[in-house]
Length: 105
Image (tube, rainbow, N blue to C red; front, top):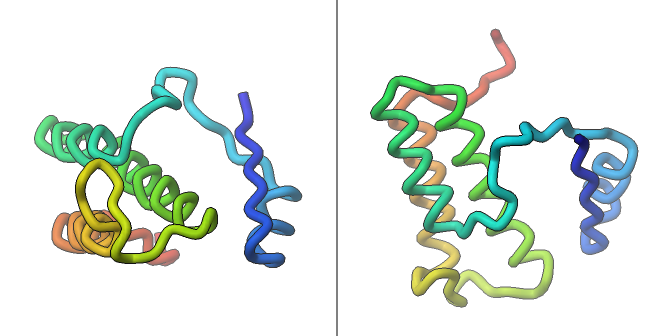
């Protein structure tokens, strides 16, 4: 199964995402909320599954980016939390737990 996303707000992203297929694991719920992404990422990290935790955090960032592409502002809320705070939470989660992909792997 492949996920194809079209974000028309940014031509570079639109080009990359329409030319590159991103494989999506079958067992990830596609109806997951941003709160679910964050909670499940923390649970996966607690179990020691760093790859799944990273994937869930990245998925949460993507859901927030989707909302921003649709015109949401940083002060708008998703799941009763400001968008800017969601981005901070996900980025700090990735950085503080050494889950950032540096490209040096």
